[in-house]
Length: 154
Image: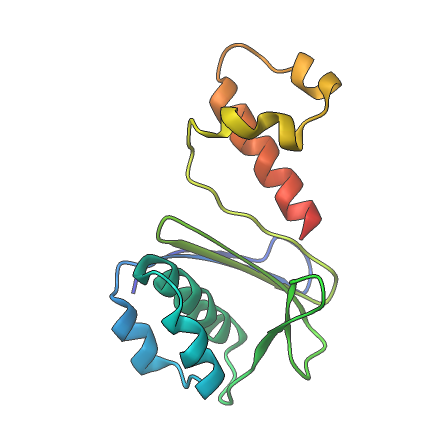
């Protein structure tokens, strides 16, 4: 059970990061999936299945509730906890899963540093931001900026 990190960065806010080394079958056996969730998973590649399942597993673990909590999506695709006052944000990337649960609106993003970010930098940075990019550590800076904007968007 590779829980990499848990923290409480703010009052009434919890964050957890998991490295999903277990097979998807582990998560499927631990989670009480609805028929619609099982159907949804059929259309996902195995790696995406594992990411989706691990974020749900991590959420239930972080909530520490004996009853199952449904994670639904609003009209903008943002996940939320059904019949629950807490806010949440999920993220996954290359076998890592992250979740933030708070009493206030929140956003989290987790990314594996990748060079391909350069190809899409113009999609998330304006001209002024692009002109201010440092030459040293450019790839790391781009990945950080992407994650910041993604977390704010969420």
